[in-house]
Amino acid sequence: MDVVVVGAGIAGLSCARALTEAGARVRVVERGRVVGGRLASKRYNGRYADIGAAYFVADDPGFAAQAASWQSRGLARPWTDTLLVYPGGTRTTGPVRWAAPGGLRSLAADLAAGLDVRLSTTLDAVPQDADAVVLAMPGPQALRLAPPAGIAEAAQAQRWQPVIAAVLTYPSREWGDLHGAFVNDHPALATICDDGDRRGDGAPVLVAHSSATLAAEHLDHPEAAAPILAGAVREVLGVAAEPEVHVHRWSFAQPEPVDAAYAVDGRVWLCGDAFGRPRVQTAWLSGRAVARALLGSDSAADQQFT
Ligand SMILES: Cc1cc2nc3c(=O)[nH]c(=O)nc-3n(C[C@H](O)[C@H](O)[C@H](O)COP(=O)(O)OP(=O)(O)OC[C@H]3O[C@@H](n4cnc5c(N)ncnc54)[C@H](O)[C@@H]3O)c2cc1C
Image (cartoon, rainbow, N blue to C red; front, top):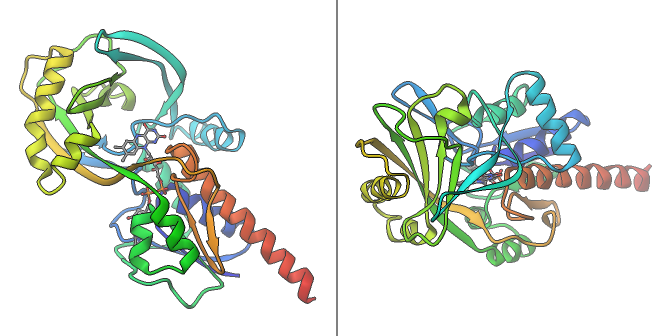
């Protein structure tokens, strides 16, 4: 079976890996210069900061096994189960959040190792030269490839919110006991994470994620959101120093959950984090579910025709 996976985010890579391990011939095509998609770590002043997913939770047994594999090789580690909630600064305890010392993108790079991945290649149509094509990306991006009707319908039904991420580098660590914080009911700010704490190098770097409202207002000029986000962090945490700020725009950051593992129309499949709660784990599971279904249908076809 020849499969083209379009998109080297965590969904596409988990799909490609499962298919490859089962013996399929898989080509992954990615428009970016690196793998990872929204599992993104970008270098500022020589140091990586996580600018997409802030952390991941692994409460599915299959994904927990993947996390354990990363942990055993020093790629990921349990980070914290305690975050703050503003206004008020109270503690909230939840599931263990995992982080990656080398940046979360290093986990995508690990999944991509040994796969046939073509980077810096943007597709504008569904490839014709494969038995199956997996569009592993947000629905609005999949629509640009003019997919068949069933996929187009599923993609159009998805609802997405934008986020602007701000990487704030301070002269020194001026905040107290902070792993990360949810900021509720704020016009500009949704979360703050201590990137030095989660990465484990103690760098004086915070990453703030905007509210969807602020992002929608600044999608065309995200740099204009930089002083607003820096001011909001100052107000919430009481950090006096001026940070150096870099922003990154995510036009399709967070989808509303859909109650299915993937969509399929003929030989074209759509998967990603819209198929469940919008999380790293969901994307990984969605990609695996497509791989399982493809392998199942492949063996069913073999049985039918032999
Ligand atoms: C700001 C932010 C904060 C988040 N926080 C968390 C968190 O704390 N915890 C958590 O679990 N999750 C979080 N998430 C969600 C998490 O990042 C996603 O669920 C997950 O990374 C999605 O993976 P994916 O493979 O489905 O999609 P993506 O990572 O978006 O991958 C899609 C890939 O397809 C490529 N592509 C698109 N179109 C084309 C084309 N035409 N040709 C070739 N390639 C194409 C893209 O370049 C991209 O690499 C966050 C996301 C954002 C943006």
